[in-house]
Amino acid sequence: GTPIENRLGDLWSIFDFLNAGLLGSAKEFTSFTKRLAALPHNPYRPLRELVQPYILRRLKTDKTVIADLPDKTEVKAFCQLSRKQAALYQQAVEELERRLKKVEGIERKGQVLAFLVRLKQICNHPSQWLGDGAWNPEDSGKWARLREIVETIAAKQEKVLVFTQFRELTRPLEAFLGYVFGRPGLVLDGETEVRKRKELVRRFQEEERIGFFVLSLKAGGSGLNLTAASHVVHFDRWWNPAVENQATDRAFRIGQTKNVLVHKFVCRGTVEEKIDKLIESKQQLSKDLLEGGADLLLTEMNDEDLLRLVALDLNSAQAEV
Image (cartoon, rainbow, N blue to C red; front, side, top):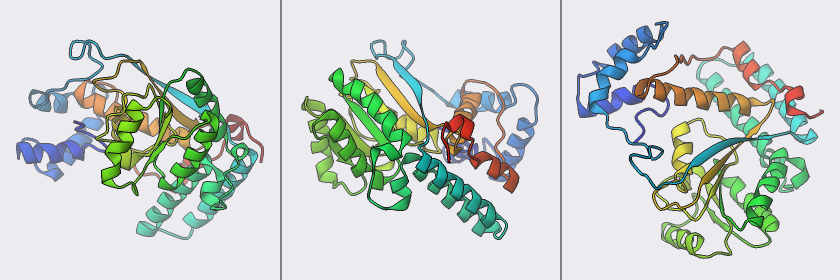
């Protein structure tokens, strides 16, 4: 399982159920972890030593656990923004800056979350945000990068899983990949009936002509065995690394006979680079408790830090507005 998904409180909740009182009350635990975070070296070691006797962790990557499981390699697939994407992105950032001056409290949090989604939609494809139904491949740097990757996969007659957190993106991706592969693939999202899921999995696993499977992250990210795929594409990124890892494990699991290559799409110079760093930080938080590691302190951002997070760096994005 995954003891920590978003915050240290996840760990407290588990232990409060299994061994109530071991980590104190929620308030005491929060105070304790704040004191640990202020320590200069290996700050979470006391907590790690406290919970270690109760945690039995087995990783698929440990060859002493599963000797015959192939390797998994994760790579960043960096993408450029098209001019249309860059223009829409900059407009959104400027609008967010104006909104932040007018809202506060719960309303501010809602606005921030809404704009983060908007920016990620623009990074995927302008049509996802505009809702114009155009989906022109040349309008999206991610579309171009995806084509480069899947053309190689198709040429090798290998299979790929493509995950997105947005249900509305699954059908456009299916159409685009069908064009690149020269034949149709499969789609699974929140609207897919439960009785049809087993049949989709069977077809992907058994039918050689089916080269790709597009899945919404929440609907298809767990409980499926898709070891026919040796490639996994995370077309857009989730805030929670545990959810991404579970999705990757649809292919990287017992029964896999090929090495698995995981492609994580990131638009340079955008909030996606910062999200990527946040994901890595969350992973480090989990490692810090379970394996030891560097310190991590997540705090709520003020307006200045938030605008710095979402700001468009044209030099990195390699686009012109």
